[in-house]
Amino acid sequence: MTPARKPAVQLQPVVDPAGWTKGDLARDKSWVHELTAAEIADLDRAVAGVEKRGITLMDLKRSDFALPVLGATLDKVRDEVIEGRGLMLIRGVPVHRYTREQSGIAYFGIGTWLGEPVSQNGKGHLLGHVKDLGDKSFANPKDRGYQTHDKLPFHSDSCDVVGLLCLHHSQSGGESTVVSTVNIYNEMLKQRPDLAAELCQPIWRDRRGEIPEGAQPYYQIPVFSFEQGYFTCNWQGGYIRSAQRFEELPRHSPALVEALDMFAAMARELCYHMDFRQGDIQLLHNHVTVHSRTEFVDFPEPEKKRHLLRLWLATPGGRPLSSAFMNRYGKTMLGTRPAGGVIVPGMKFKAPLEAE
Image 1: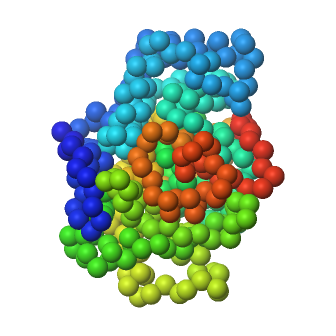
Image 2: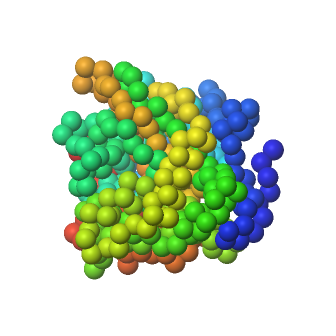
Image 3: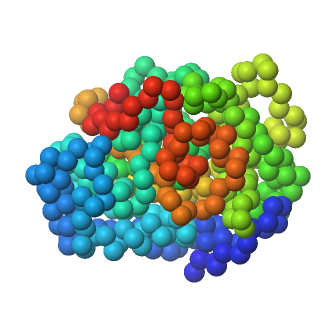
């Protein structure tokens, strides 16, 4: 049974349903939902209805995607992701018999039941693609990890919830791992409260070239924040370290370096290795989890390359966020919630069906 949430106080242990261990996830698989035949049929009808009416992904709204059967399940899924453990796995989306457009409609439609899609990059992608483009490297500050086959460090994305739909898995590697940042924080607090305190201070991050209007190429936000009795974590270890390329920023202190190293080590130690199959949708609450993936090798056939569809979702009414999050998103955001994805000057929203 997940614990009831108690008001979170800085540098005190956090009691939260999202404070699970890898043993908890292994013992209790209620966070995995296998779609029933009736739910799949409901999804098929909704996809066919969108196709028949000629509604584009950019125009698709929840009201266009009626799910009289699956909808009740998605409401429970959303509650578990936002208020519960902070993760869910939906298994069995029939992408093996869907066209690419049908897979996009199904996934985007499901997303509208969970939140509001926001831009994932400077190109304005509301539907994203995780696929090796062949000429990108995470080591390049101008490239994004999802465009590569590289191992990715643990991180949280710049939105409330990130979702991944697996169209094709890799020939080898590409294993998905996830860890509760509530658990990391509590363990750090227990072992090294001085280092936990370091991560409660604002820390510079690299925007990696995706700069909002009027903003600098870097910004500050703590790793651990506390707002209205809620704990949140924002971890982008690679972006924190790469911000040191800017000579005008202060150098990391020995204590901060030790704290960053401890967080990364705790993530590796406490993470859960998730079985991620074709047709699975992985949903993660970025404010209470971090995730990573191992390096992967693709099949030689182009049509078999590892390919995931991605959604970044804002969740109105979700976990309260401190004003520091405004530093990440700039002045232009979706609605009033500071979780509006990546917004840069001249950007136009789009939802491509292929990686670009």
